[in-house]
Image (tube, rainbow, N blue to C red; front, side, top):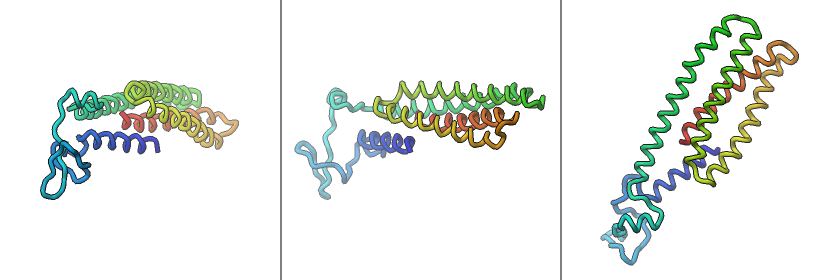
Length: 190
């Protein structure tokens, strides 16, 4: 839900800034009438170009929207690669799983969870730097809800093994899996 809100907000900002549809210099039928604009034969008003200073005073960045979009794509790609590296880096914990004991498999699940959690925290920190205060407040609330849901889901999955040696293993494995999924979700918000 939060991701949809953020995407819609970003899309709306892009469109309002005139770079979302590639028609920033073209006439659009949704343009409001203007005293300074020129009206064509269809009654569509074309706003006069504003100087870069005027755009900055009004909070518009002339080409920075396109630059920002490119930076976001680059950042998403960078973090996706980092997450792929986390996945590949987990090969070293496979040795623990191959031992076949509950203790070693639980250690492997714990280490896997810790690595995904560290990646999640890194992405979250990047989002804190990039999102507006309002969007970050929404994300913080969503993240709190996600943590509660993650823990409840993991506990339900582990409940099947209640009191047994597999309970802790299942709990950590579920938390690791759910955290990994959340990492990829948050990367899309960058």
